[in-house]
Image (cartoon, rainbow, N blue to C red; front, side):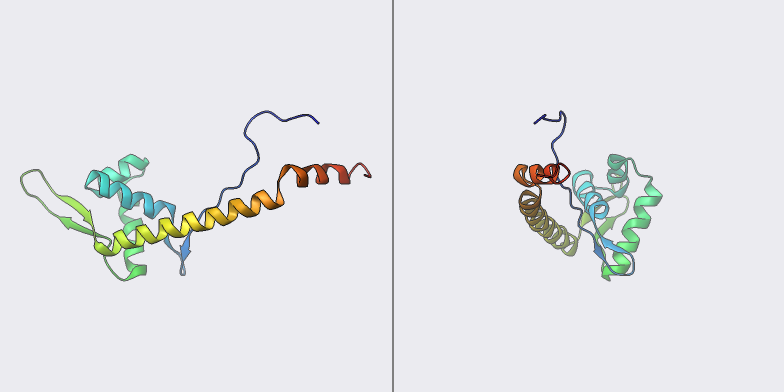
Length: 130
């Protein structure tokens, strides 16, 4: 049997928490991580290649859905303003990461069960009358 070159088959799962619209997902998580790293929404948006206005809209929508702020904004000062994650945002991010890890682990297990080399051989043999 010929072996195909390149990346092997695999699955990718994306976790999104929804209400009427997206409440939390990879984008919000990445923005929060970026705020934690850079100390600002603008810095986080730049890291992602996202406009500040888009990042601000995403954060405001998430805060409205959750009903509490995700960042504390500190204006001015000697070195300008900065932002930090609220305790709620830190917990949300930790829980999201744990949920995503769990879901991805189960998805990988099921993928290995349904798409292992033996099962793929069976699929190929179906069309050959074997």
